[in-house]
Length: 185
Length: 185
DNA sequence: CAGATACAGAACAAAATGTTTTGTACAGAA
DNA sequence: TTCTGTACAAAACATTTTGTTCTGTATCTG
Image (cartoon, rainbow over the protein chains, first blue to last red):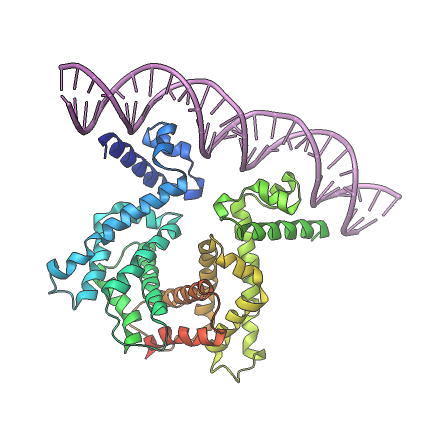
């Protein structure tokens, strides 16, 4: 990919996220984005079809990054502090959200956070069905159970963020297990 | 309230909901709304400040109606089929969503359904904290527990709707209790 | 009936959208 | 380094949307 394309794409992403922390998605105009990113109008439309398209690309980019190293946790993660694989994955994601990507929290905390939480849940649905061991069969559809688990996690993260990240990732993991694990007993 | 105001307000509401079933909220313009409702531009802005304001009013109107008779359930509902008060309330809301208000399902099923699920959750948070008996204290904050319960319910309803309402309200109530009740044991 | 008000219709300025054209600067390859 | 393609800026443009302001008409309320 051309370095010029990378630069403008990155500039537009930054400008967009920057604006999202100040006002809601629906109020942001393409004009503001290109002014903030300091690129021409033509350039924006060369990269993205619409504002919605930009949003989608930003979400994909950010969450791809958060979830990218999850598969590697099995081999590289230090399991001394986490009881099992599920704990390790959950805690890892929470740390990633809190520390590595201020961007993501800016987005999840903004007025239009719901848009991103929807994406977050989609990624989690894949994660849960692929990497979590759902040991005990219940009298409910598996699909519903997966949906409930990832939905509860999104819900919890939202609560965590809105409360100002007062708890540690480990504490949040405990909370999550407290509301989820009893289902399997 | 003036009959003329009622008529226009109702016409705008209907037009808005009608449009929502055809395209996403962000794509709907005030122009389309007033054309569909067959009212003047001036009239629209006399009733609502912005499109967002209209959305908010519609949500309030619809959910107020769904939740309005919940307090009366304790005295009037037939408890023969439902085990307890919580069951009765849950089942009642599900029936209300499914049968009494095609509008609400149109809205929750549309592209912008997330907008309304957010409102739905706010109403549920109030309901849970006011009408549900959270018997057993847990090692998690009460506020978080309430959030988890209403969040899980919204999640379940969303799954129910997206699946085409294949299950009965009673069955959904069982599912809900299956994922929620074990927390208290 | 009489005054108040909700409305339609039209006109308006301002802003935003998405496209087109022309010229410039920079990338990667020979 | 030189060449060629392409990403870009700038400007102009038609179109759409927004929100306001005016005037006259219809309708409610008392």
